[in-house]
Image 1 (tube, rainbow over the protein chains, first blue to last red):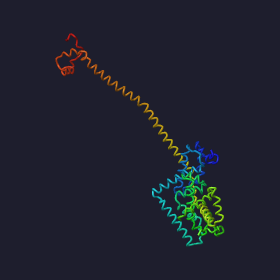
Image 2: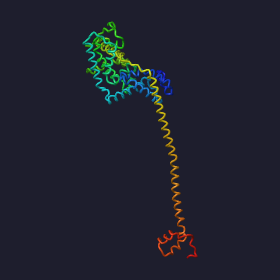
Image 3: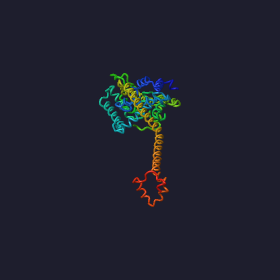
Image 4: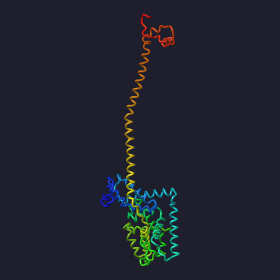
Amino acid sequence: MKYELLDPDVRLMMRVREGSAVAYEQLVERYQLRVIQFFQNSVSAALAEDLAQEVFLRIYRAREAYQPDARFATWLFTIAHNVASNAIRKLAQRKEVQVESADSQARVSLDALAKASSGLMPSRQLDRQELSQVVKLAMNGLNERQRTAILLSKFENLSYQEIADAMGLTVKAVKSLLSRARLNLRDALQPYMNQGVNPGRFGQSPTTDDEDLDDTDLSDE
Amino acid sequence: MNEREPEEIDVDEDLVAYLDGELESDRIAAVEERLSRDPVYRARLKELELAWSALDGLPTGEPTAVFVKSTLELVVADIQKEQSKLQRKTTAYWATALALAVIPFLCLFVSFSVTQYFRKAEQRRFLRDLDVIENFEMYGKVDRDIEFLEMLDQNGLFVGEVTNENK
């Protein structure tokens, strides 16, 4: 009853349970971008739409048994996490993507990119696309669970408890997982912070002067 | 990645939880007190915040214009598949029910027919042997064996009744 009152998406899903195609369409429209982006960043851009459709199909199939005992997003991303895990496992089995080596390749690429940009052209500013690539590489350097926890926390604003429910972990495990993930992310982006590049500018248009850079000493050396 | 001491791990976990608003209330004061006096600790917090905000730069793809439409079509196809599966199941169910209802009657009919057949066979044999049975005493006086009598029968010599005049 609590989630029915607090979460409008739960109410929509209950209408889907009663057979409303319109309510289902609304849910798909509301969540399509978030679910696709989740798979783009946790599995692969090429498979993101297919995997997202798999999630929405599973939601429809489960409609009759749906119980509003959590926020709708928590339930949806529980399904998404399962779909992502299965996809990553299948990809690894088919050897289409060497998952472990992709992580280490990402770290090597990130290091190379950092050295190249700092060594060759120290004052060169990374453009938006490069910054985006840097962050993407940093994320790819995390393992699957760390990536998932980060995406659910950052983009879906799920609480630790909700992330725990979605991933089948304890809250303590989520706290530890997120801590390691964020520290790994910080370590991966450290070279850019050391250059004085403000990663907070990522996602913004690059500027030609340094007025918006943070003057705080970011290095802990 | 760098190896960290256990105490350092706890400190980092507390910092991350603090940033996420998930730190236990009894530990918040300790974290805030340390932040206020320790510049290195403050710098660590800042780095974590910056790395976190960097995620806003992740590539964001847009779904194709037909994503919703194709998802709905997928659902419709799934429903149709479910319905035809249900229909096949229903047909199989009724076929099985009908078979189960008919089989006992079929068995009864077959057993009745077989019983009738053997009963009639017995009756036919009885009718065939009726002449012999009726005149059994007389045939018993014939000073020949059964093969002789069978030969006479095969030649059609046992025709009609044997009367007392013929004794």
